[in-house]
Length: 176
Image (cartoon, rainbow, N blue to C red):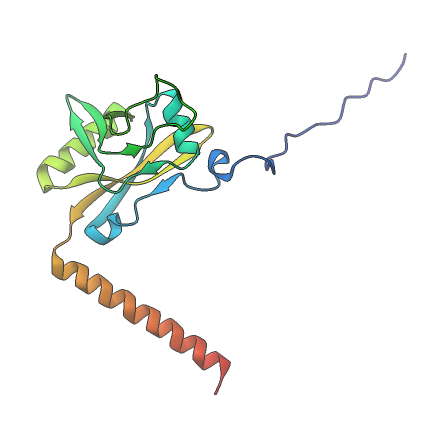
């Protein structure tokens, strides 16, 4: 009786060199850099986004702006408002509206917990970044509390002092 050999395990290549790094999940589609300047970011959550086809293609192309967007809980559902996803450049008359309200997908228990924290402490939900995970668009939401002007100044002072300290250490290593 002939001996059967099993075929070698063929693993899929994880890093396809032709694939876009944003679509592969190696690079964020959009980040909200001003959020850390205007808010104290306390806790972060991941949520899915219900998008149309042209919106996903536009996110892949990097046409997203999270600067003025925020999250809102209404009737037990989580929504993303003022998130600008530019129209898909190869779209037709069925292209999406850039500033439409989009539904965020989270578990009901997580939404209830967020609702309690937002109502009690006067906090808000701010999207900090949008990215791809396993081929799906995800948004990272941060539970945030607004900064006052003096808080922003203190953060800037601390950042400047840290930068100067790092530069002094580098100068000290190089020598005179």
